Image (cartoon, rainbow, N blue to C red; front, side):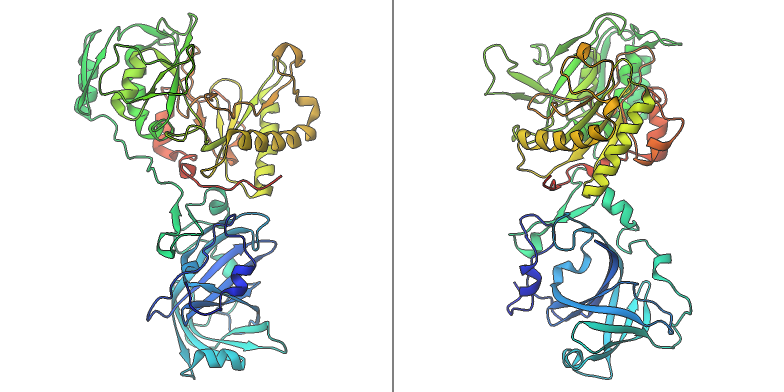
Length: 524
């Protein structure tokens, strides 16, 4: 930690058990860096920081630094910040000091001018310095006004000066290229307190979406050439495939088991991040979706030895003892051949099955609920989460509804996430009470939608992203962006196994950046 008390004021204003900001670590040697962070808190401002004597000497600049030599920008001198704050980009929880989203707007190096003792120059109220950054360059001056806090930031009229230059015209982060809106929606990194500074940064998407490769062209060709039954060698394992030409979906043209196996093999790089490390409940339709399906959780005795399995030691006599953990392309292919049309992963990861990693919101439409009604409710959740500075992403179910997946940090219980989702949902329901019923049984809801928070419980699940749904054209449950809620062409079953891969190649998965996000839920 910094050995003097320069960070005492900074630390006194923050609760490091709740905020992801750094608490402070050992000073760096020999660096003369600067950073400007665009910070949307109660008001948007720019935090201007100079590395000096092992800390970041800091000013809050409401209108931001500029290259315009005529501008006189107010700069409020604030407490010194720790060196680790240099490249912090993420979200400070609402309710914490400085709560809001932060981007690294500019960075580079600086040298003092007209003084050999910049600390003394700051104490005397006037610092001249040169910046060499990606957006800012040239000679600047910080001059204290008539009190300790209010200063003026000026750019000298040198060869780097640009009249009319506005920092808001260049909103992208120099670290990631993202805007504040994008960081607020999906922070890529958070900080943990109570650990050494070198270990404080935590990646919130530790599982790359494309850690798993799709089958090779040769492997896919072998699947196409295979007769109705055989063994498919895919990514180091042999999967026994049966009845490949059986029609599972009465689409036009019909969709066969071979088509289903191929789809799950190709979508695996996108889907496996939501399945790996979790027990999976399968909804099977081995005779096709026009025949009754059934839930299957217990791993059958004929499952291959290489299939990852989890034994639930807490299971009662009449409960499932052994679950499949779908963590590879061959495992997903085996599930498809098993007739598992739908896959529902647990909300919690192994081994901490009592700690959810997602808080789930399920807009469950009633018999009289139109999709426009569902969209109206989803937009209210969008507003609520934005107001709470909580990152989440919607997903069309492939049938009639929309779900919203909210990532949470480790340590929450299902009681915690269920209660939090209940409170948010009650607020949404009070806004459009004519659309919502809180009755448990469908027949008692009067055809209205239910905002279901009860799925936040152990072994209660929602359908996985990119899972197929058991209706005629093989629609798929697909994550979407918040903006797509306003797309007039959006339908809950808009994408099928024949079209969703094209979407993924063009736009990717908007939910993927939230995988593994250690998000603190604000108190309600």
